[in-house]
Length: 629
Image (cartoon, rainbow, N blue to C red; front, side):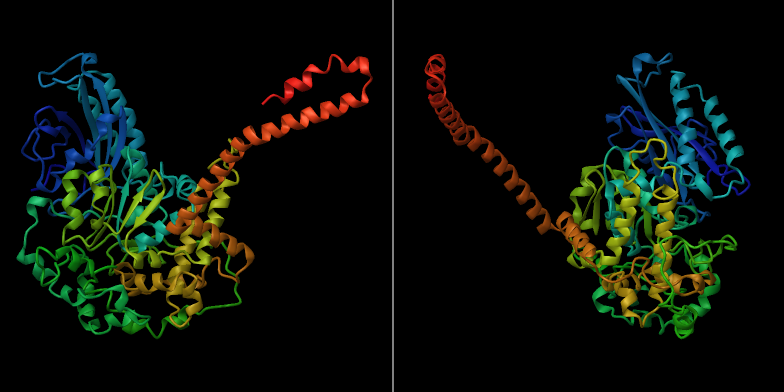
């Protein structure tokens, strides 16, 4: 079942949709152009089964608490398509008495509606800017039956966005890494490494505009991720469709080999896992594009009580039975010579020139559009989801056995309360990352070199923050500069990970982190191919070097601000200091006040001894008055 207008000849915008809140039926589609269903009209409420959550995503939970808001969301591809559908929705509400034409089903004091754009291209900020203007004009009509402006929006967007390249500032419009660093500071690097490990990460904050902005800004730190790395990020099935499908089981018949893989079982020779199945990988490398659409098979020996715990043993990822295991046996002996470490070459923090990069090409294994460095990494593939906003109706995805991980956003407190379903919960308001697993906390512990890198970013971002004319517009400390630093960090990390015999280079990133990352799906896919651009990248952390007193201070400051023990010590010191100040004031008012009065009386009395008798007569009452308690 495919909606009208899904053929490749159409423009980047698929549909313009209006979602409203009905007092009896709840959230529902009220208008769509072109129609979402091929045999229905523009005002049909019917939806494709794959898009059954669209009304709840476009009209987010708790939206009635805000006059207007904006949300980004992802929809799964329809049958016959293979790519994610990107949604941007602008929500507004208006008083019912202000409407010029009030329909019969309007029974509440306010009317809540969202105007939504479903697109093939991830131009979130650009679509939002255009959509906000149209939504405002649509509401100013005060007659929601006037849909001509929405049809004009569809034609205008397709004509203006047709043929536009996914590069430059258009993709990152509205996403500010500068604000992210100012808010999260060094924790932004922890978020970066957390997603590299393909863990279950849940962002939480309200309103939803702040939520999706923070989540997508973190993803924008990964080179090429938003442009080309999210096409497989929403491959999930609605709840009514999840079943023990035999075809699903057969498509990943070899997945049970990796069920018992865990971080503690892997040592520095983790890549040897792929050698045994190198031959099947060679046979399947030609049709890897079809393999990308396979779902993961649930682990064998599942029981209702242990399904979650069994699946947890798959972390940090479940590996595909093909593709990534082809190349380790072929290139393991060649890579050390190709990426020769040059200890004499200084590591600089400025990114190297990318002249002659030559654009992007189709990855043979990942199926993504890749640059010459093999980026973006294949993180959001094979059941690892990216859901900038997750409706309450999608809650089952957190424990779905076909979902091996996710980076998702939520505004409903029910998501945050069920901590056992996520590896990490990011509370955006407090800039706090809650991780229950001590092993994962150990993996994400920032090394001294990492702390130098994070401190370098924070200092450059904060030093000119008060300059009205240069804030966010300069190169150093600006948005593009921050992305360039993370690009350099990832390039150096990839190059350093190839140097398996150099423990010093790996230690700068954290040995537990490197060990866990090397068995993730994204690393195995990247390692399975050669990437010519990596020959120009010098291995080693950009901020490697000898320890100094400044590093000790940085480590101490980091520990006090982030560890639970440090927070308790800091709170105790603040409480003690506050009590000392309050006690000092009280003592000063009682004892100190009495001493001051006594000193004043004595000095006055001594002064009277040196003065002539006639002058002392009027001064006598004053000492007596001052001595009174």
